[in-house]
Image (tube, rainbow, N blue to C red; front, side):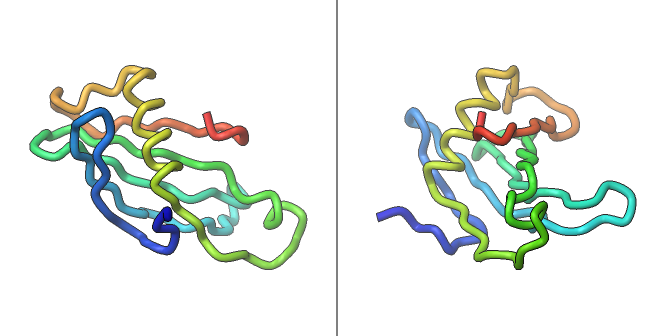
Length: 106
């Protein structure tokens, strides 16, 4: 069973351990409107992290109440694989790379 109600954790993807943590819940900004959640990724033993920016939930855009925040292992593992494919090199140095996840989760 997937652990859904966690806000941080460790996940093994393709034999490598990654730490992840929720950095921002969906929130309203006066300038940008609704912003989605942000999840921080860090491969254990490396320096460069990655940030996954998700779109705001559709229910917020429609003016409905916020629902329960759901972060599953599947969402995080797909995000790790997508960031690696997009060019994230955890062993390099520098600022965390930012990746925007589209509404389809890619």
